[in-house]
Length: 248
Image (tube, rainbow, N blue to C red; front, side, top):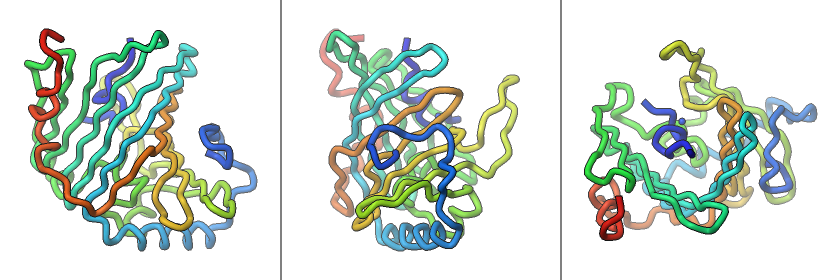
């Protein structure tokens, strides 16, 4: 059984020049610190005027422990200063779509909804430190609401490669792991992340998160920026209205 997006994507509360072949170990030819600082400053500078981001994406999840691969598609929406919604639906090998589920961060509460159990919406309040921002797992590939200095404090960045059109960057959380139920978990919900940026737009072509021997790779299909976003997307009931009749 696959892990729901709510449990993995955020671990909340979970590329290389050849797209899709995300490195599992850092490149020995990593770029110099001054080059990474320049890219990070440009990245944050391009993102400074972002008010909304609406992304359609595909996802491939590789579990290196169980040697399984699953694929799906979804949508991620960010709205300044502190609203976030992500949903995903995976497709079985026979082409049959599985249930959709998702996470909502509405500025006050964290919610998890699922077509598997549409009558039950998990909800809990955000902590004081979470209320003013969106999750790091969502903000990182877009530098959404993040300054370069803040990003440097949170992550160790490495410029893995640069081509005429793209940067490939690795980000490793600086936070020390915390203990939860006997398991060590990274503070950001991933062990490391990889971002492939378009050099003209500084928008992510690809974002991957590696955690507990599971690599999830997200490829942007379409990105809309600073266009109107309805607040309905930040209500779980809006997503569950589309559940086919009789489906549980």
